[in-house]
Image 1 (spheres, rainbow, N blue to C red):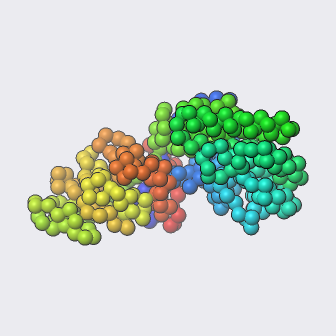
Image 2 (tube, rainbow, N blue to C red):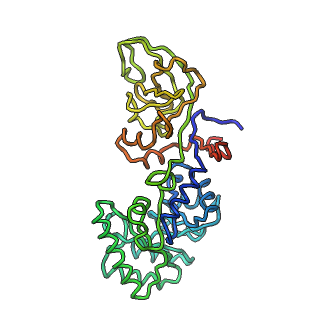
Length: 370
């Protein structure tokens, strides 16, 4: 089948299965909710949701109702929770697509109740992150009791999110969450799943004694005990000489006092490789050797210095990001750009095909331009 891009992401499903088993062991008796928002952090949510399900993961978290609907159209099994805000005019899709919504105000619950179709919800408590959530007070207890009595709103769970300010602040948030849930349960509210730990908290604290955890990046190989499952590969499309004193790319930057050989590669910042790697801040690997970026990364192309790789030729494979010897990793790229790794992997454009490998062989690919 034709491919429309010479640059691709490769997803190692063998490693993914190993990471799944590691996460399940960390979760213990708690139910793992796999967070597959942002296209599974750039790895391809529709494909990985199926793989997760075959390995015993039955619950999934997404950011918004649109993501939930896209996944439900391709896979009809498992629970899905929208972790973010759902505006009132879109709430009816929750019942249509069998999706649970996050509720953080009594007004949201009353809107759902008025729509006349049963909808599952998870209550969000603000214990310190100060992003979304009911405030930890007696009024919240009263409102959750009210919600529990609604005919069309079914409480499936309750959660909070750690700010990760320090171990002490996380402990205080956990204690406040337990206090609030204890008070609600003392009033007869059945809360179902209770969750606070994301992947980072899971590796630090476990489930905090709660019956659900919601790791995301941990499944994809970012955290203790797991391995990254995604790499980016490309190829050389042009090799040319640049005389001494001439710059490269927009602004004619990075001029040097000697002749160079420069290779052009068919990807740029619109594919998700950050401009912060320009001017030698990052590098690719060609024939086992590092080739630094020269000039500014363009929207759809970029250039690297192959002067020290005289055998480099058009068609040669290029590792843009990997985890082998002499390869730049996502962690290293993130550090060089001053961002977190999640922003890099989730920012890989959908126009970059995802190729899925088992035992080193391609078993599936997705290409949104095909």
